[in-house]
Amino acid sequence: MKKILFPTDLSEAAANAFIYSLHLASKTGAVITTLHVYRRPEVKSAKLPRTLEDFYASYDLEEFQNYKDSLPTLREIQKNSGFSHVKVNHVLKSGKTVDTILQVAEEEEAEMIVMGTTGATGLKKIFLGSIAGEILEHATCPVLAIPEKAIFDGLIDRIAFTTSYKEEEKKALRKVLEILEPFHPQVHCINVDLAHTDFQTHAMEKFKQGFEENDHLQFHVLDGNDIQEMITKFLQENDIDILAMVTHKRSFLEELFNYSQTKMMSYHADTPILSIQAHTLE
Image (cartoon, rainbow, N blue to C red):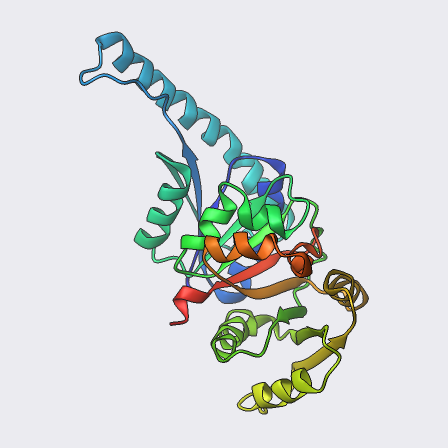
């Protein structure tokens, strides 16, 4: 991985997520590009009066100054975390937040987007939130979403990957292994069997084919009646650092969250989520 895009709204949640991007960059040798997007006030006029031109110039200058003033905080985080050696570029752009983030990610050829999520009370808000949800839906590279309550212990050595043992998820798992290989993590592939049959176990055995060479990979079928409870328990008992999963288009997620059995998508608000978009696996 050579390039990481780090969108920031200059909040504490973003500062917390910055630590994750530094660790990833240090391990992979990637360059981080921080990006702050601001929105100019909209004025419906074919031609701006001189006073409005001056206003916009003043507005841009103020946004620039605000961003400039925030950079020492990021540099301090970088220094205190022992990552002064990581190369970090800073970009300020005006425009629509989601569109601009996606555009810069394409222009920079970012291989991952790392971003904080503010006020998340579970994955439902992360995935369906106005900004993070749009990024997760349309990004063409993996997205690491860091809830504001996530506490980084300095290690990324325990990963959980949720799977229903579909073929497309093999590609996603290989992507996760590739991204996190420098950390040499233990990766747990987990599935919750609500039907209490041998079907999922058989599916797991078939899914494991092709991964025999990876001795850091474990497969689990969790038997239970409540997906949320089982996944949360697994994350806590195994001190999972990142929960990885395949995500789909917004319409799929909206349908998913309206279905009572899919409370599983809100299982642990404090665990960072590594999203591999289904449309990038085709």
